[in-house]
Amino acid sequence: MHDVRTVRAPSMLRLAVASLAGTAIEFYDFFVYGTAAALVLGPLFFPTFSPVAGTLAAFGTFGVGFVARPLGSVLFGHIGDRHGRRPVLVVSLLLTGASTVAVGCVPTYDTIGVAAPVLLLVLRFLQGLGLGGEWGGAVLLTAEHAPAERRGLWSSFPQVGPAVGFVLANGVTLALAASLSEAQFAQWGWRVPFWAAGVLALVGLWLRSSLAESPSFLELDDHARVPLAEVVRDHWRLVLLTAGGLAVGYAIFYAVTTWSLAYATERLGVSRTVMLACIMAAVVVKGAVTPFAAVLGDRFGRRPMCLTGCAAAAVWMFPMVALLSTGEPLLMFLGFLGAMLAFIAMFAVIAAYLPELYEPRVRCTGAAVGYNLGGVLGGALTPIAATALAEQGGRVPWGVAAYLTVIALLSLGCFALLPETRPVGVRANAVPAG
Image (cartoon, rainbow, N blue to C red; front, side, top):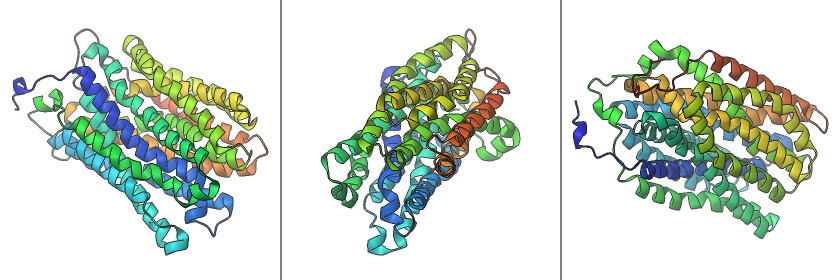
C-alpha cells in the first residue's frame, strides 16, 4: 500500500480552482467546434450540399466527438484506476489542446477536396477522446480530496468549467463576428478561436503541474487489473441508468447552445451576434448558480436534485421552443435561462453523485463511462435530430419540444431507479458500490 502520510493535503480552494480552470480549457476546445459547426463549417467543408444538408453534415462531425468520449473515458479511466487520477489530467489536456489547434489549420474543401472533412472528422474524434478522460480525472481528484459534508460543493467547481469554457469560446467568436466582415470571418476569422486553444492548454498544464494525487487512490492496495471488465460485469446496470439519467442534461445544453444557434440564424433571420449574446447570458447565469445548487445537493441529497431538474426540464421544453420561435432577444433569453436552470439542478450535483456510486478501484472508469455515454445519448444526436425535426414543422418546431420532453421523462425514470448516496454523519468513503 502507498504511504498516504507522505502526501500533503492540498488547499481545497487551490485544487478546485485548478480543476475548474483545466475543465474550462478543455470544454472551450470542445465548444468552439460546436459554434463553428453551427455558423461556418457547413459551407466551408461541405459546399456541395444544400444549406440544411451542410449544417446536418457539420453537426455530424460535431457528434463524432461525443462518440469518442466514451472511448476516451475507457482509455483514460484505465489509466486513472491503474496509475492515478493526476496523469489523466495532463495527457487528456495535451491531446484535446493539440487536436483543437490542428482543426484551425485544416484547409477547406475548395483547397484539398474531400480530405478536408475527413481531417475534420479525425481531429474531432481526438478532441472527444481527450475530453472523455478529462471529466473523470478532474472531478475525481476534487471529489476524493473533499470532506464528505462538502463534497457536493467542492466537486461542483469542475462543473462550472463548461460554462466558463463556453463563454470563452463564444466570447471570442462573438468578438470576431462583430469586428470582421462575413467574408473575413469565413476566410480566416473562424480559425482564431481554435489557435487560441494552444495558449490555453499551456496555462492549464502549468496550473495542474503541482497537484497532489487523490488520497482514495493512494490508499488502494488492490488495483483493478482491467477496470472496464469489472464495470461491465458488476456495474452495467448502474452505468446504463446514469447514462440515461444524464442524457436530458446534454440534450438541453446542446439544443440551446448549438441547434438553436443554427435554427435562429438560418430560419428566423436572427443575427449571429444577438443569438450568441442570448445564449452566453443564459450560460453565465448557469455557471454562477452551480455552486448554490451543489450546496442544496449537500443538504437535501443528490437524487432529489436530479429528479427536480428532470421534472423541470419536462415542463419547460415546450415554453422554451415557443419563446425561441419569437426571435425576440429577451424572450429567447428567458427560454434559454429556464432550460439552463433545469439543467444545472442535475449537473451541479453529478460530480459528487457519480463517484459516490462506484467503489474506488473502478471509480474513474465507471463514473466517466456513464457520464460520457449520456453525452452520446443526449448530446451527439440532439442537434441532428432537432435540425431534421425543425425542417418538418412550421415556424414553431413543436417536434423539437416533444423530442426534448420525451428525453426528460426517460431521464426522470432512470434517476428514480438510482439510490441516494449523500454521506451521513462521518461516512465519507463507505458508500455502497451501486
